[in-house]
Length: 274
Ligand code: KMH
Ligand code: ZN
Image (tube, rainbow, N blue to C red):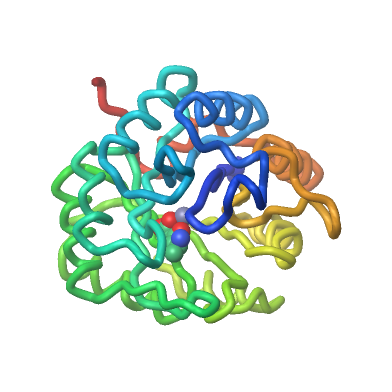
């Protein structure tokens, strides 16, 4: 089986520093966090950013500052969110792609998100996708429910000439696909030949999803965006702590951990010289 690409979903848009003191917010904190995650075995840094008050933002300047800080100290693949927070408008979600990150997320459909709705209208998802294709940004299809795989197929057939297809299954969001024990077997059976995939379980489902993913040969996403507790009743202290656990579990399953260079090769990312 391939080496495991570990993605760290380090920040997200939902947690506050009060909820989770280990959350990296400033460029300085992001740089320290990214360096520790790289040392622990991560190869992709899934990036949301915050403003000076710690609130989620899609400010282009904030993405530029965060990316510069991370790239100054690591060779991690920086993957921008285009999902942002449920309250972000479409223009704001699109704008940071102009910075041409190596990778960005693309949620291919709308989904209830606890008491809110994470809105992803087809014309807007198409606009995000076309911008990524035009700028050479490798998309990661974010799959919160099964129908989103078919939406990704339609997008690819309509707009893409060819690119590597990588999917991330986000299971256990209240409103999305639960982390049923047979969910990953079903979802991965619907992927096109040659695709790669990762998975994460939100909250309590996190460890079960990680275990199952490693057994099935998938890649793993972890991080404070997805799981704030290390185990029941004990908060995680840092993103690196969560990455270390996945690296250990991978090794126990007989799988090594991919470096960022390995991950670029597996995902068809051609590093740009800046
Ligand atoms: N914060 C969620 C509403 C992504 O990063 O692409 C959306 C999200 C997905 O986190
Ligand atoms: Zn995210």
